[in-house]
Length: 371
Image (cartoon, rainbow, N blue to C red; front, side, top):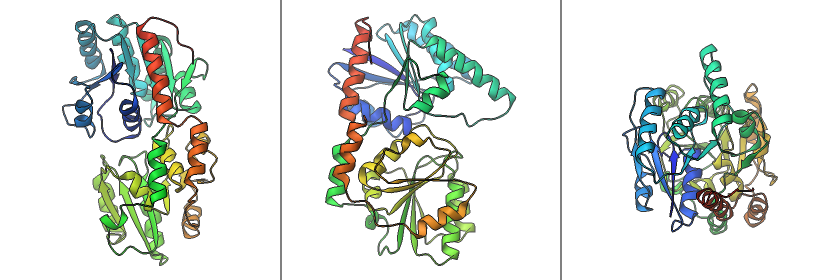
């Protein structure tokens, strides 16, 4: 059996981590097993499932990136069972790849899940350039969730495997066709427009903008319910905005949920006013289930999979967002057609898991892998 060591920060329900778990659930675990390096002692949302699937979670605790690199080098030197390291932490991949190289790891995968780094300033820009250089030169295999994510971290799409953020298409087809949703479970006697936003509660996801929209909808007398799904460092700020705007009867923080597909099935529209993204899994899920999505123009155009459910809007023109919400039409119910289109474009988790399995096996056998 091949054991692959994935480098993550913490296995919470975030975009890259959810994509990774989708692959882990569907890959043939009699041939390949995943283990995870984390950099926290806090329990992750997916930790119990990882252990149940036979994986290991190895925390490495250090005060800074150099310390983490040294500890990771030490760990890899002492654990010869790992011949493949798969790093998922964007710019920080550079230190993890360097640790793997210093430990003599032959196969070092750098995986880009984003199109931008949220930090600014001279030091951040210098670090970005340094990290991109190391990622390009220390990785023996480059993977990205999309063309723009590849261009960001590797400054080229050449020799980069575009591994789509695939999902269980059959699951979403089944949920859409049975019309089962969780909205009434969360909030009884729902009426009016049902809005949802799914993602980590942080600056990048731009919930402050979403709440400004909600405030204006209420001021204009629009009847709506807004579910915000996720957790993160901006939770207190979001709670305060909800209170300050008098939105307690309209906006509900649901935290981390395991019924997100059912919540999406019951929604009329999803908001994603992000400052930047890679290729969000949740947008694939929304299009699979037939949910209209209003998203910012900061997100790559490649996320529109051609099923007529994605609308790009400029964050500088909030009135356009409000107008679109007021004129939302009934959700597209043609899920089987959407599923077929998404499958043809490479978003079937079964197929992608099989291709990733072949990559790992070829590396383990020291043979060349051709995408």
